[in-house]
Length: 240
Length: 234
Image (cartoon, rainbow over all chains, first blue to last red; front, side, top):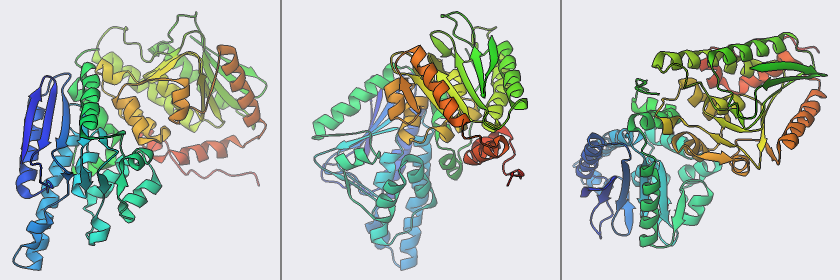
């Protein structure tokens, strides 16, 4: 499912299973959510979250197989809706996490899996393998409201938004860097994980106040906060 | 403190002081800047241009945090700076910030309130220090940065990453419009741009309304009315 490991300043959230495509099923969603809340509860100055997976996939999105195995089509729709609604708090936790966040996308990230990566402050992927892909247009699935807002918040380029969301482009590492979707692309799993750790070390060394960091992050994405029901707090000025 | 000088069509607002003065935006300086902007506004004619610059190593190092330490004092400066942002966003003439030195926090925001920003390539950084200082960002600062810095990753690097940005990088990130090597050079470039814009002899009322229309969310948070009908001279 997933593990949360503390290594010094870092919280390392790993979606486990080498041969798994890490579908965001209700169980995995619940496990990720509770791991994020655990990290939040243990946050100190200099904490950083790194999210990654094992194997060929970062995450292949919601568990559509589980949805389709429902008794009736309308039950299938309800199952999908359940996953959409339970993933929403994960995005909300990431956008309001009181520490910098880094997604190390060591494999394919599709649909909600791509959304999961994008919910982080910094995203690295591989240049040699793996694509980012919003499959919804190809599958004929409408976007949850907060997905569109997330993508508009995080993808600055209008053409990139259109290519990713409307055209279903499968974006490889170099292209993802060019489109401004990710912060770097590295050749091989070792290198991308190394890059993630190196960035995390730099971020940790700034020893930022997590509450301030979180509020500044939220102010970058007001529309996303609104749709996630995240209030903008005014933290007390404890010291100057 | 600061001076307002008229040179032909150009209003030159200079934050004055010796070369080590970091032009902290304390209540006195804030009040003087505000009254200078209102003075320039009252004397505006077609072709008028505002150029804002400083003297020495700093453009401005932000609010005066050394002033008696307390949350209330900082809040007061945050409140007093807001009308300056509002005046700049509604000023009936083009505005140019000539950032001849470091611009940090509210000092960086002051520069960004201008239509055009020039800085030095050889010296000076732009830096939003709040994340490093553990200071919350006033709401209108966030809105200002989102209005003026188009790149999503640049906003993250500046506000969330506390990046210190030198001239060439600032151009690359789309934060400034040009860089020049040396204080004389950047000031001359500012004057040249000022003259060029002044020669267009724009109707200031229309110009100010158009500018506000570019930044509706910022106007909203500043309480500035947008879309007030201006009688054009046809």
